[in-house]
Length: 119
Image 1 (spheres, rainbow, N blue to C red):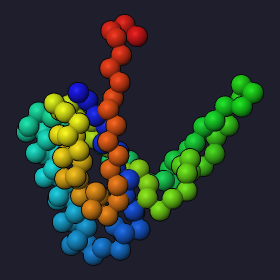
Image 2: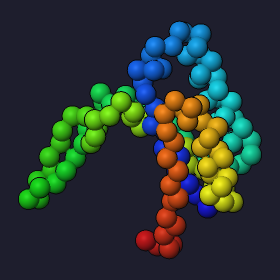
Image 3: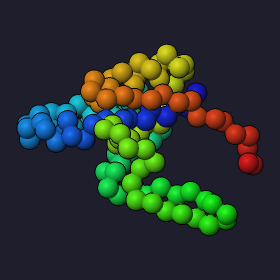
Image 4: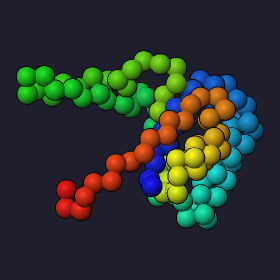
């Protein structure tokens, strides 16, 4: 089963860390990513640029309306994601708990819908 692990962190907290602490934090991310690559559970994963680069699109009366920023204003922002292929939801949750931002933010675990071939 495939799951998306959506990482919602607080960029202000990360920015408040010393350069050595930031390097350690990123080292934890690299170690986690390496571990799930080695286990064969990693499908994909990427960090995202900051919310200052986000655009939100809505459609009204057939017209696309674009606004700057994310769709919600919160301290926590989606900073990246992993897609994992695991045997159970319990394993997906176990992996989510190992993501460094789970200690200071949140990691949402969502099962990916499997669509029939040809759709």
